[in-house]
Image (cartoon, rainbow, N blue to C red):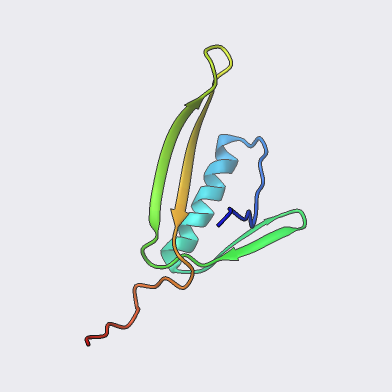
Length: 90
């Protein structure tokens, strides 16, 4: 299945602004609330389960002299995934 981008934004921000955004996401994760991403006319609500997969990746791309470094944080889960799923024994 091809990837469908539900929300995307990219812009330069100060380290403090980025930290504020990450803190807001962390606060939502702590309280179990859904996370609403909004920029311009784009908006999407995401509701991660209690134990999503968390990936942290550091990358270097490009050739020497024109390389780009990045740190990526990603939460992944399947729709409807829940830790509270009932257990059945057959």
